[in-house]
Image (cartoon, rainbow, N blue to C red; front, side, top):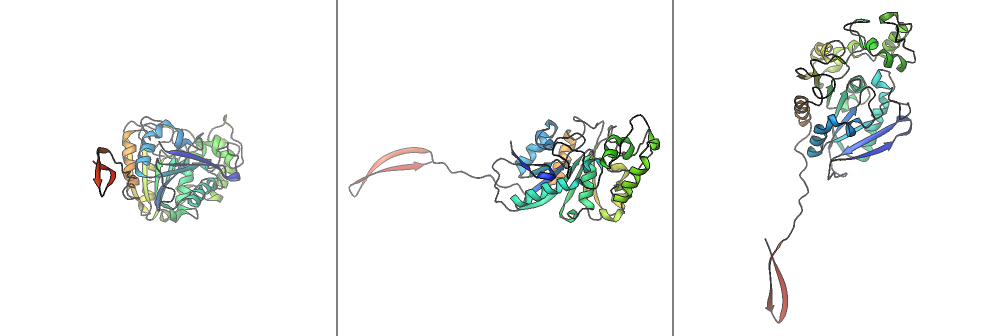
Amino acid sequence: MGTTTMYDLGPDGLCYITVPPGFDPDAANIPMILYCHGSGGAPNQWATLSAWAAMRAWCDANGWIVVEGTGGGNNPPANDNGFSWGNASGYTGWLACLDKAEDLYDIGARVLLGRSMGGLGSAYMFTQSDRAADFDGWINNSGVSTMLYGTTGGSGSMTMQKFGANVYPAFGYSYDDGVSGSSQPNYTAVRNAILAADIAPDLWASSVWAGKKILACYGDADTTVPWITNGGGAMLSTWLDGGAEVTLALTPGGTHAAPGSYGSPEAVAAMTTFLSQFAGDPPEPTVKTYTRVKARFIKLSDGIHRVHTVPV
């Protein structure tokens, strides 16, 4: 198993960095995943969630480090109500984690992995942030990929409304669970805030995806973040029209929670194949030389007795 170390980044929350066994901190071009957790996710979700065990093992075996954290900007470390829910400031928490990793190590490939509601923050960093050009790829793992696409309520409800209990507070407004659709008292104010912040991926120009490498992993029975409306299905034509290189991994019968989505063998195979294009062969393990004594004998030479060891 790898080793996970926590760093307190003050106003940017907590940062966790997981490195493989036998990791050389002085190595060059270390491949890295920046992981963005989803709703209610702990800042060390990657390191602790059992559903990621197979991926952790692959990263350990292939020399990848994984960086994650609160992802809540200036929120307290225990509060994950940051950009993962759509506001325009919280993603700085995850970028601060990236900065920390780069302070410690020589980072090579950088791949974003957005899980569930973390899809929004990772999409923003991948295309809109001042670090966008530094990321080599994006794994959208059952990720929320739109904000205003769809209807205001009911079947096909847009992200702003379906996840309103989280999105509204992220913009400083209360959400009334007893009111549906655009009848929400603060609907117009929140929608205007989203438009002003330009944080709805479904409204971005297709050109922002030019040359981007994307892996979209979804279960086709996911009702939490459906592929169409809230997921990547609604963005697929925009990605392709913009010139993105898109790989789809749709798990038949897969739901939002493992098994069946990101814990499935199909998704693991897709993710490891995707990651492998950004880094070369895994580092060679340290070779230790041992000598096993096969025989010992005493030889008289020039009047001096010497003990000779014959290695295998």
